[in-house]
Amino acid sequence: MKKIAAIIALGTIVIGNTSCERILDFKADTTSQIPADSAIVTIEDAQQLLVSVYDVTANAFNGGFQNIPEVMSDNLADPLGLNGEYAQIYRWTSSFFNGSFGGQYRDAYIAIYRANTLLEEVSSLEGVTTSEAQRISAEAKFIRALCHYHVVRIWAQPYGYTSDNSHLGIPLKLSADQTPQMRATVAEVYAAIEQDLLDAEQDLPVDNGIFANQMAAKSLLAKVYLEMADFSSAKTKSSEVINSGAYALEQDLTKRFNDHANGSLPAEFIFTLVSTNEVVGSDTLVDERGSGFVGNYRSDDPNANPALKASADLFTSATADTNDFRGHLWYNMRNAGTPDELYMISKFDASFIDVPLIHLTEMYLIYAECNIRLNSDNDGSGLGFINDLRTRAGVPVLGSLSLNEVMAERRLEMACEGDRLFQLKRRGVLGEIQKIRGVDWDCPGMVLQFPNFEGTAQGFIYNDEGGCQ
Image 1: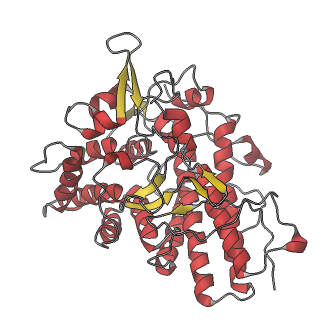
Image 2 (image 1 turned 30 degrees about the vertical axis):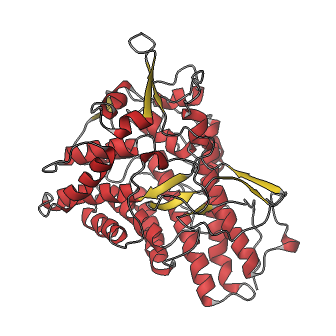
Image 3 (image 1 turned 180 degrees about the horizontal axis):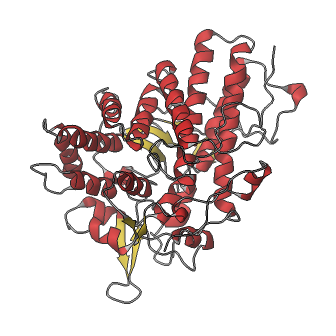
């Protein structure tokens, strides 16, 4: 029987949906690697390795991954003087010396490697049942797809950039072999992501406690299909999630990002990174999953000068209607009327925040857009979902729906969650926009440069740098 020998770092609090169930009650391992002579051989060990897959994924998605595309888009102000690396990508001039983002890239591939290890070994473990192996494999495929998906969107030009998507994507790692790899095409990467998610959708449980479930896979498929301009499939998957009855639109916008007490995550959260700061017996459990948001945006201290602030364009759009809760709950102005006027983002003002990677609001937005593109929203169902969001925000409902109105609502609802750049690029592929902040939407600097350690693969092709004028 083969044995698993994998890098592992176990966290006490991991990823979840609306369940407060805790299946873990152990402390982080103090070593970085399990030696071969004590390799993981049981289903219990495999479950712990699976937890470590979620754990390292949460390290990458603590806001770090999400901040990159926001800074490159038109949602944020110039961060010059506060954070050199963010200032670099704001100007679309990233280099392979940009260490912070190389760390997030590495975390994503560590998660992929661990997921691959599970996929290769779980069926041969002592005491494993067919259903257990199936579930663990499905969760591993979900995480592998999630990580490949976010990396390819940041480090490669978007799906549709070439007619057959033969342009270079990212290293596609579908085995635990750690040999350095060349870049696969974007077509190959998306095909692998889609297949992983279709498999996960088939095999994930409907209810999976604090881990990914079937609806998480459907939701991520909806996002992927939207990126691929497969509007029919994106509408189908988002509709299945919406109509499942498993989630409900949260009416309190302050709960989008907040420190939620155990058991009271918003009912619209589909796949969430859960932070914890609580006393259990004699121990205080502290696990911050949103530090990349809090550390870069938090503005509730009047003396704070966060690295990331809203652009004037985003602030104007968000506050255009004085009744819009999204404007006065998520933003505030400093130094009004002076040359130093600044627009702070208060969406992440909390010591500990949960990070909903996928939520029902986004499924509403995907459905509404696809319904317009497919049939001009002739049945009014997309309009109904957009009006649900507008009603929650305290603004008048619309009598009809256009594509531009859906995209405007998407910007307001998803602001600073790592979404904006990808929507602009999609619209660039479709010929609906030409520029982002005055430069071509597809100029070379609109993708991040690979970290220098990828050069260990002989002949690895890096992205062109700069070129956005």
